[in-house]
Every structure is written in C-alpha cells, then in structure tokens.
Length: 484
Image (cartoon, rainbow, N blue to C red; front, side, top):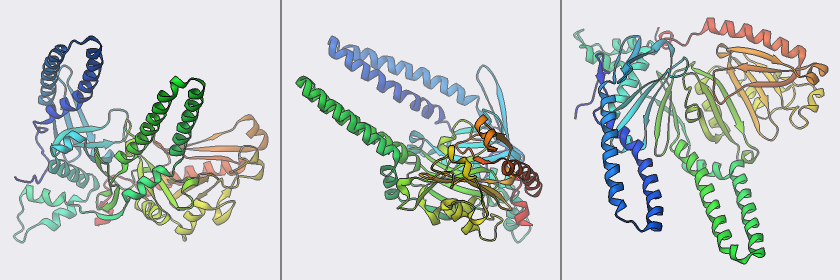
C-alpha cells in the first residue's frame, strides 16, 4: 500500500468509508436504547414477535441514515492551498469555508473509537475566529491525516523553505511531490509522559473522589436506617447503595482515563505535540505563541506527593475546550516546569526556576511579588497572604490559593484586555480586583483584592507590555525567524 506524500491541491473527497462510520456512530446508541426499551415492554406483554418488527425497522432506518450520510459525503470536498485550507459542503444549502493559515491555532488528528478500529482519523484545523471556525475533514486514512497536518503546519510556520533546500537533490532538480514530501517532515522530541499508575492514583487522591465516597456512605447509612425502620427495604437499600457506589466510582475513573490515558508531550519544529486518549485518541499540535494563558494548580491532597496539573487556553477551540485544555494532567514539580518551558521557554527573568517556585508555594512579597495588603483579610481570611502578582520581561504571573495552590501565566503579547472591578466594600478599603481577559477557555486569570494604587499601576503597565510584546513577536510564520 502506497503512503501519501502530499496533501491534495485539487478538490478531493474524504475516504469512501466516511458515511458508514458516521452512520455507525450515530446508530449504536439509538439501537441500544431501542432494544432496552423493547425488552422491558416484551417481558410485560409477552409479544416476542415484535422483536422481528423492531429488527426490520432498525435495518430500514439504518439504510436511510447511510443513504443520507453518503449524499453528504458526495458533496463534501476539501483542498489545501499555500495560504488556507478550503472546504465546501452542503446538500440543500451550499457552504464554502476556509481556514486561513496565518490564523492557525492548532491542528489535531482525532480518532474516535469506530474510526480507530478501521484505521481512519479526522483532521481538525483550528483557527482563531468565532463559532464554527473549525475545518473538520473526516474521515481519512491515518497516514493521509498525518500528511495533511504536517503540511498545514509547514506552510503556516514558514519552515517550508528551509525544508525544500535540504530536500534538493544533487542534480538540482526535484519534483513537486518530492519537495512537498520533505516539507512535511517534522520529527518530535519526547519531553514527558504520564504513567497510567500515576493517573489512576491522582483520580483516587482527588476531592471529586472524596465527595463521591462521602455521598455513597451517606446513602448507605440512610438505607441502613431505613432498613431498621422497615425490614422490607433492607435488600433494596443494600443493592441501591452498592450500585450507586460502583457506578459513581466507575464514571469518575472512566472519564479521566478515557481523556488522559497514554498522555505524552513532545516538541517539534512545527509546535508542541500532545497525544492522549484511551478509546477516542487525539494527537494535537499547538504552534508556539498560540497558548493564551496557563493555570498551574496543586490540590491539598496532592501536596505530599508534589503533584501538579496544568491547563491552558488555546484560541480556536470554541466548542470543545474541555477536551483540549490539558497540558499536564498530573506530574511532579520538575515535570510541571518542563511543561511550562514547552510553552514559554524564556520567562524573561534572571532566576526563572526561583520565580516559578515562589509562584507555586511562596507568600507575601517574596521574590518581587506585589502582594495583597493586610486589610484584604476580610475578603480572604485564609489566602490573602498567598495572593500576589509579578511581571517578568515576557509574562505576567498571578498567584493565589491556600488550600489549593495555583498560579496563572499570561504571555504579555497574549493579553487581550484588562479590567478593574470594585465592589462597595472594596472601594471603602481602597482595594480592587484585576481581570486579565484571555481567549475563551477554562483558564480565567484574576488578581484579587490588590491595593488600588497597585491595581491601577498594574493595568497601565500591563497594557504597555502587551503592546510592546505584540510588536516584538507575531505568531504567523513562526519558524521564519528560526531558519534565517
């Protein structure tokens, strides 16, 4: 079987299996629900021949669904250009969409369970913009999806020229396909991974798990008391408690495992490479400079283990932020530092490790932080000493949390806007809260209860730093400066 060497420049359809995979994904849940309902009804009515009617109905409905999916596939085409990825589709209403490469945020290769079983994948090109700005091409062979991803990143990064020079043969003549094949090569260097045992351990050592256990014990004790009052409820109470316990624990464990199993991070010429997922796998490539903000957090239950979690905001993921917001699900301090340096290798500070350590566990004005004044204790009786902000040459750091240690990192050029918020009591105490507006996502940087003068100075200085940062660094064609 030949391996594709370049993404298509002419209008092309996805693989012919696409309508069948789409139909299969949609029908499985419906079939299970229909059969479950039928079995309950048939037990009561004894009308077993209805099973044949139900089966025929499912077959007819399945053929209709496949037919509609086939028509949708026939009118869904895509192609790649030097400046954008184009897609046109629609049965009744025609639509043409383009993902401009100068606004590229990330490129993902996603494999839902059924596509993974048959060796296919979806290519998702995420660009900055409003809702429905994603170009989704499904389904392609895995090799085709990888080639499309690599070539899009090579064009968007400005790295293609250097790759073409390296690919030029001795006689000085190279075919278009040979040149483009060289441009898509971008091997990555592994940086860290998350062992399965640590991931499972982090789930059991979490407040969510503790809350579920507490709920189960509460239900169990209630059922026990009910059984003492009414002995006929004993079996039902015991069985119900056991079922709640099993289902609750299984749901928590499964959600985390399915999202983060096999988590790996690496770095390549075209960006940060992340791969994760158990049944539904995702391989993300996030270009440098596209990360808008980070949140580094440590739960009280993780403190003795020195475990940290890092989440991030990336523009372009409007409708699936929860699925793509993790940079490190759980890891020791050194791994958290490695993850941070992936995104921001230069903090612009003479002692970056010391500054980050202070952000992690420091208090007061240690290491140059501007802390909340003592009069803010009325709002934060437990954590006011932990609150603080500091700006380095490249990023703004915001620290908070006593029981949950956490801090935010916002590259100056990614600051979109700032706002000062004051309530009546804050005005009386001359305090203010600063909101740093990033792109929409799970990370929401807020510096609470600063001295009013410090807050005003922070807003003015950060606005200036943001302007200067955007002048110094633009995210488009990010590898041109490297290859010069």
